[in-house]
Image (tube, rainbow, N blue to C red):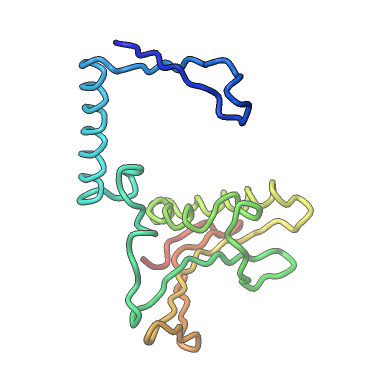
Length: 181
């Protein structure tokens, strides 16, 4: 490592009366430069590989699917919807999927769909989470996961043709079951 001292005059409009300051430049050794170049090369390989073959599990070396893909303007947009029942309201009604209501956001719930398919009784944990997060509200005695599909025509949603497909259900008195895939 070599150091170079350079005298620098202050340029504060003081007429050059300020004392000279010393600035030190530190140069990397050959080993230091090689180490940094190696780190950059490893990161570059990681990012290129992640972009070509990676998915969400490779993050931060790959793009997240939700940001790196798009829907066809003439396809359909599919989202999960959460419906619940309570003892005083036995009919299914939609509730928001967010951290304040069930402790998960929509993407987390959609990502756990394979777990719900294997063990639909995990829907009961959403009712438990809601009871902890909003104790002043009535406890849910049923939770149903629904896939809502809205067809698009030229990039415009056709809300009249929206369909709901129940995927899984849990009820406090009837257990749990998978209804669709």
